[in-house]
Image (tube, rainbow, N blue to C red):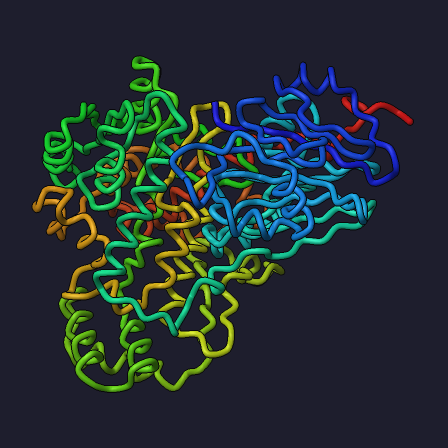
Length: 593
């Protein structure tokens, strides 16, 4: 089971929590308790500070020796973490953790979520207490939280579903974002960003291509193997693509590793050929499965356990396949290459040329990058140059998130009061636009990585590890498209460790044909869900546009089917949570003073 925790902090001088009731309801054990706070988690997931002053929940690794999980922290290290309000932890360690600690000097309780965002952190409040938790299932299933849909959240969600904010789709539930620090002081609270990707962008850093390649290879292998050491038997999703192949080669021979690949019955979505090349070269078992339409029910929410709608319904097929494989072979973790494109700056734009012109000026280097962009994207020299020159004199590198209004009513589009922003998107003076795009990709992946229930074996995305992200942020954007190849430094770093066919591969398939098939074959269900559903009753949808798409004789357009799928998932998610009462009946677990 994935890491879970629940913590309580009093707004007054005394915390009245019935520990036995919490343990019975959650299956978690009391790890740390004080006069005003308490933390429940599993012992194997917890690293306690000496003298009960704090706790780190989730996998933790030391930067100086990251081949094994940290099992204990000595008193000087714990004290320095507390004194630095968590900065020392982020500087010297990494992992997928939440840190909770109390500063005796000011009696404030602090909660820090690691920069990778690997372990979720939600928080809510009652009249007298704060509650911090890994997942809303732990709150709701045990009666600690009875939420209702936050209808004001949904317009913002539809405008930019993958731009995560602290506001969730459930009233009374907020999320602490990756790299943020939550400080609780009685009835008051404060949220601040303690880690920023911009702190790791260094324009003055001069590294040879060989040094970049060596650093990337060593950092990736070290982090992936550290994660691998935490589990007995791992299942890795592979496609023969670069990112999952890198993880496979780092883990092969280091742990009990098996691979699986999903294929559509349409040849365009069948990557088994490449997956076989990979697993044959590394001598790894490979499970092959097909996406099956019968495994998908659009009336069932894939994100009912989450605080916001997230996944598409057609993910049910791959979830079923891998769950069966893991259960049959007693596997305790699922690894993926998710986030590789984002971390390794798979960017199809001219902004890397803008970056190089800003740093080096016109010359041979800029000309080479111009040619690299054209080879990578297929555009002409003039098209790439015109695009770059159009951005060259704009000194504000702030990335502006695109709004998606398709199938959203005009009232709903205008009603969103939440800005489309994130602290990582705020570019500092002198920032380069290409690096702003790179960082926006890191923001985007944070919006999509927590889809599985915490009741299942853990999902691990090792390429999002903090040391890998920081190492990649230091690399200039123009190096990522060298020789007209995306993710060029990583390809070169692993060129001698992976089959040449995979390193040089340019095509990439996917389950699009299956997703389209699911949507087309379920038009009647979609009409029932959306044309007479709860979202429609709230005036959130453009009914004319939806009716034209769902009731017409033409196939759903390629630009629309994923958007319709996302709206359908939101509809069934809303139906799941509707009918719930109010927020947080504290009498279920909190003793009266």
